[in-house]
Image (cartoon, rainbow, N blue to C red; front, side):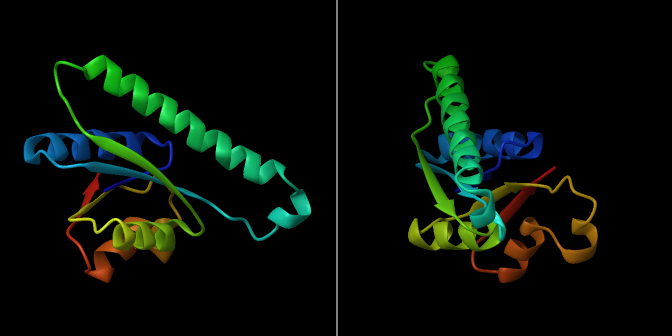
Length: 134
């Protein structure tokens, strides 16, 4: 399973996970967790629409990449979306999908060095092998 959020680090993580899936002839679960913002109710539907657009764009990018690689690398994949906190969403996804391993990109946000990134929290959970791709 790989977590995607549209960042460059997540794209590198997806490429790494696709290579693992190809070598192991495994199904690659690509997961996007749509963030839920505390003030979203006050903002109306625009926040939900934006996260839906991000999910749609990720699916289009993944399909385009898969088509470009058809015949060179064949990877079976499924795209899943969950709503909520990124860490909790990835935990829920990994449990529901019975993930053998979790691959995520390294956080690019400076504040995560202090409070801990999603990747660090997944590693600390110790429930699956976690690969953090820089």
